[in-house]
Image 1: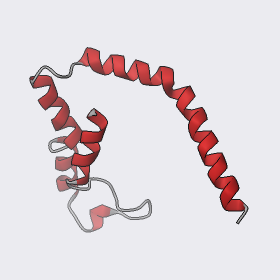
Image 2: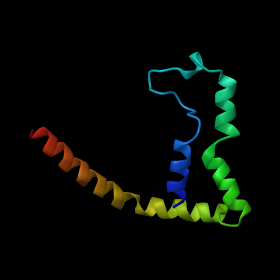
Image 3: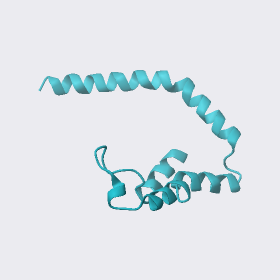
Image 4: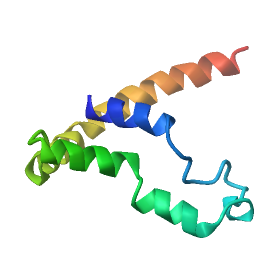
Length: 94
């Protein structure tokens, strides 16, 4: 749920990164503005602080979540490889 809310809120805020890997956004906007949004106005950071103030999130909860994700990661990697292998195989057959 946390990741979903962060992703949705990031879609509605300022784009901090470049629009592409070959683009340099500092050519059309000041570096100071980018840094301000990256550090002060970052959606994920602000949401995390809000959840902490309300007692819904803590460093211990984050540590537990990260450890659980690391334990499950190999299983999800297998599933993703299986899915993408099938997609690539089907695409190549066309």
